[in-house]
Image 1: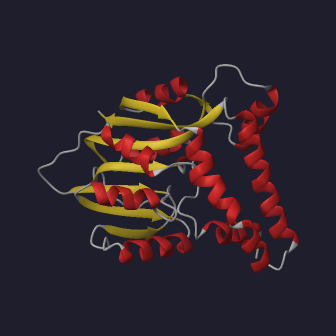
Image 2: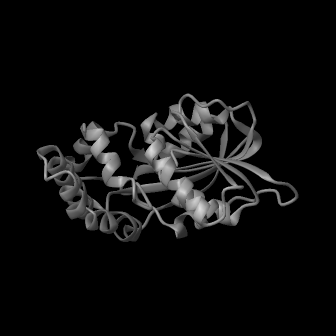
Length: 249
């Protein structure tokens, strides 16, 4: 296995592949006045194993197309939706977020939690806008500076890992210049990182290492993840995921 395959193995049984919670998904949903007189069409892009997809299906009337690049994650979502009796509401699609086969104005709502960084914030917004109805909504979470001044160490790290990291005001300006009207913004609490993502992930380290016979690459994956956790604990006052909700105008 290469490193990407090991990461998929580590994460595929996770409820979440990144920071977030059911409460965050529901909070974002509360800001969106979706029509109640018809079935909605929703796309969840970069859905992973689909924790937020399940939440959306339970709280919306309509059809959700859950998109991810990795079949292993979609298989887990399919198992969950079958167990919960939600298969009539959730379809899965294995493809890249920048190669979507949808029609213009197809969706009432496009959702994406912690995944747009794969193609870049502005690039993703420009591409996905085509698939939204005029008056439709975009809801996504994106890594965001939450302090005006940061230690150089963490700035250098994030600018190397993801140069598009920026403040909420910068992200909102990008939304506005690409034909969106901002509706709401909030950032994820530390609990959404630790209780709902890092702690459950940490509990799987031992079984993951055993499964891979403690290979050097498996140990590297675990050590890199531990380092990410340590950096978050050290610098959590300076960055988080921001949740952005905007309307296509």
